[in-house]
Length: 484
Image (cartoon, rainbow, N blue to C red; front, side, top):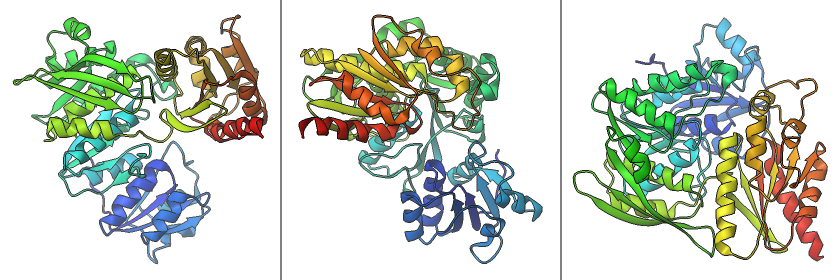
């Protein structure tokens, strides 16, 4: 059980962040007194102010009393906010409980049917798909996700239904704060080793997460991912209800795990980016469904299966859920279409792990090959974190080799300090010699570098979790200038 906190007056440090702002909206919609602070003005901050939330720009100890009295709890994102933040220091000195965002989310989900999506990759996309599908099925779930739904334009909502759908973040083991009725694991691949230190500890946190499932609940695992499937097998041995999804070939490797959804066929559209999926749901009454996904890639088809199963377990009608999947237009920065200029299509993606980069470039490759017009895939990649870049330099090089050409920016350190002698050259030096690769340490030159590589018909992808997202617009501007 999680600790219980008094949410009468909540102050949120870093309230403009994607996760924090969403929870603030849910709190405000429930009638709570919410205040907060952030380092800058932003759209989320402006939206929260329209809901009556008082927000200070800049951090100061006195901000905690923006409501006119001390808050009953202060919320922070431990990864983003340093512990010497004056508001956190002041709160602790005053005896005010300081909790993590995950603690607040656990409190908000209390009393709801918790549908939680976990995994190294695909959490945001799968959570978002599940929300869209369940909304179409009339369930009106509450939700909190790490990205903004394109159609809804929001990342959180306090619904009228019984279900609460959320991402379960493993990066700091915060997923162990929750008690899911439905828990999905999309895949497991060692990451965040700065926190876990070794792969074994990383695998263990998913086993511990499965043990958080309430009696009678279900664990849903992707059978095409070895580590997720193995976690499912171990959970079965501990008496947990487990369901699997994936291809028939993958299911045959794990006959002990009941197959809940199977991919039968995928067809890539030659117009647009759609993928038509045909799937079967064996169960007691076998059922076949067809639907069209607006975002390409086999990984997205697998994510849609997870959403079908989770939505079905939450009480949604499968046909309605499938319609919701067809209507799902994606999440900001997940293969997000940014525009076309000079017959070059530009997309932006948040991928920052080699497996994610492989998936997004593979999806783009699948698309241009289906079109059959000789278009190429051009990657503009910015590595995220020195630790991750050093850990996976060979894997990043292999993933980027799926593109026809690449511009590689220097490392976006985020919360990490630079490491002497380490640059993105440790990736580019390992890429194929015959491939056109530009290592570009000067961010201001990157857009021009990309434009120097493209020709009409090509697909460009800006990829990474840092500032590289800003380059999509700059690349489009550079391309437009070619026509002027």
